[in-house]
Image (tube, rainbow, N blue to C red; front, side, top):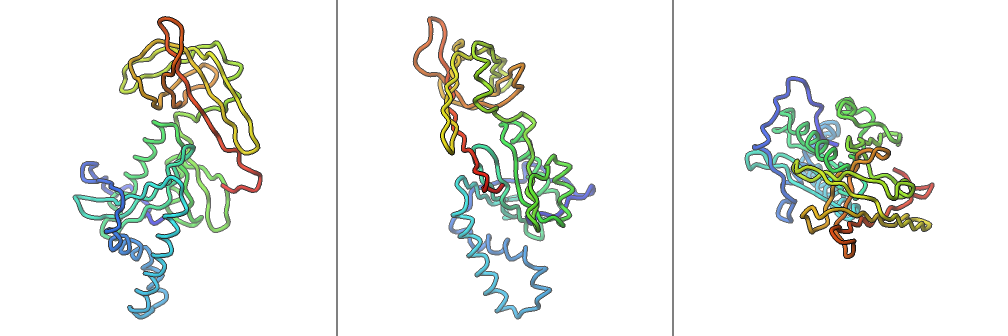
Length: 276
């Protein structure tokens, strides 16, 4: 992580000045400059001639860029723009069960202006809204660690030089399928987006299938037509399970005056040797 620790005096950037867009092939020069700026301390320590250092940095950038492009299944690699100028990069992996903050790096001219803090706090707000936790790796001696802890990150694993941090979503995560089995026949409150009220759905059926590396199944609810024909992620509330996100939508069937809504869920079961 190449993000400066925020100070209380750091001015907060106006959100309207910041923009994010996916990286493009023509951004390679800007991305190289961002990467090179994160290695300046190393450059001063080594004292290499400019030509040797430039060749080394280009090689390291190419290696990292290629590795990042192939290592993540759900990449969201973005340029950070401020007033239309390139300020840095924000690399994420948006997996179904976590949003991994792969890297935040800002050019020196844009550091200590609150941009990194605004990006992280925006991700935290997003996480609390969609129920997907945030995770990241950080060097154990990085001074930004205290900020991450204040933002709600917790140490999940100690990996020697690095710590693996996880920030649980305030919304709560989707409970395991098995937790729904004894609740068939009970009511769930579905909160409509945009403050549009709520409707009551009744859990009609729970199907669970367990394999050696996956748990899968479906949840089927009955309820009124609330006018949203497409599948989407909704917030559901139940007295025993709390408040959690669920991706569901209408399916064929249902009694007169009711619709069926179904969520299909697949979860990978980590093996004992899998790391975080």
